[in-house]
Amino acid sequence: MSLTALERDARIVNSGNDHDVHPGEIAIGVIIGRTSEFFDFFVYAIASVLVFPQIVFPHLDRLTGTLWSFAIFALAFVARPFGTLIFMAVDRNYGRGIKLTIALFLLGSSTVAVAFLPGYAQVGGLSAAILCLLRIGQGIALGGAWDGLASLLALNAPEKHRGWYAMIPQLGAPLGLIVASGLFAYFLSYLSPADFLDWGWRYPFFVAFALNVVALFARLRMVVAPEYDTLFRNKELQPSRVTATIRSDGWKIVVGAFAPLASFALFHMVTVFPLSWVVLFTQEAAPTFLMVEIVGATVGLIAIICSGLLADRFGRRSVLGVSAAAIAVYSGFAPQLLDTGEAGAAAFMIIGFALLGLSFGQSSGAVASSFTTESRYTGSALVSDLAWLFGAGFAPLVALLLATKLGLLAAGLYLLSGCIGTLVALGVNKNLAGR
Image (cartoon, rainbow, N blue to C red):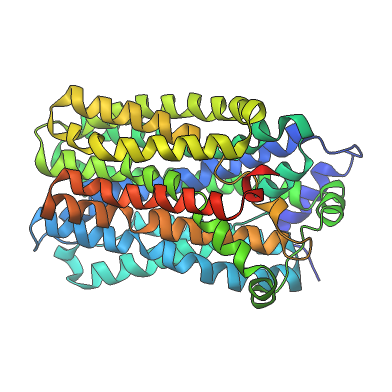
C-alpha cells in the first residue's frame, strides 16, 4: 500500500529520531489535535447563534430560527458514531495514518465549505439542506479523527501522575473556545452588522481549515513514526470491529458513556446556551458576552489543571463525584443569574467554567484502562462518541426549549439529569474512575 504524501513527509521528519517516546511528547500532539477540533466545534456553535438564524432561517422569528439551528447543530453528534464505524474499518485495512488523513481532510473540507454557504435569500430552503449535509460531514469526520493518542497518553503516564496526564487532552476545549470567541468578538466589534452577516462571519471557518492542516501534520508525525507505532502495538491500541467490541465490552461502553455526562452537559450550558439566551432575551451586546466567555474559558483552563493535581492527591473518582454533586447544586440556582444583568451573567459563567474545568478535566482519563486489551482502542472511541451524543449533543436545543417554555430554572433540569447519570455510573462501576 502506498503512503500519502503527508505520511511520507511525516516519516522523513521522524527518520532520525530513534528515541523512546515520553508522555510529554504525546501530550503536545494531543493538545494540538484537541485544540484544532474544539476550535472547529466552537466556530460552528457560535455561528449557530449569531449567523445561521439570520441567513439560513430569516423567514422564521429569531427564537424559532435558533432552535432549528441548534437542531442542525446536533446532527454532528448523531453522525459521529457512524464515522467511528466507517473509519475503524479504514484503520484496520489501510492503517491509522490513512484513516487520520481522510478524516481530517473531510473535517476541514466540511468546515471550510460552511464559509461558502449560500443563504435563504439565494437558494431558499436548500440553504438549510446544505448546512445539514455539511454538519453531518463534520460529525462523520470527528468519528474518524480518533487517533488513540489520548488513550496512549493515559496508559503511558507515570503511575503517580495519572490524573495530571488525564487532564492534558481536555485543555484543548478552553483553548479552542478562547480563540473562536476572540475571532467572532473582533469581527462583531469592527464590522457593521450588514458586513458581518455578509462576509465577516465566514473568516473563522477559513481559519479552522488552516488549523486542521497544521493539526493533521502534527498528529501524522506521531502516529506514523516507528517508535509510536511500536508503542501503539505494545499497549494493544489497535482497531477492533465495532460489533465485536460491543459484544465483549458493551456494558463498559454504556457505563463509560454515562460517567462524564455531568461535565458534558455543563459544557454546552456555559458555552452555547447562555450566548443564545443573552442574544435573544437580554440587552447585552454579543461581543461583550463573548469576552466574558473568554474570561470564563481562562478560569476553566486553570480549573482543568487543578483537576489533575486534585485527582493525583484524592483520586479521580472522588474528583468526578464531588464535582458532579457541585454541578447538581449549581443547576438549581445558576441559570436564573442570566436574567439579572451583566454581573449575574458573568457570575453564571465564572462559576460554571470553574466547575466545568474540575469535572471535564478528569471526565475521560480512565476510560481506556477499563477495557480489555482487544477492545481498548475502539471502545474508548465509542465511549467518547456516546458521551458527547447523550451529554452534549442536544443540550443547547433542550435547554433553550425548557427555558423559553418553563423558565430559566427548568434549563437546569437537563444539567441535573447529567449529574444523576454521572453519579449512578460511578456507583455502578467503582473501578471505572479508580484505575
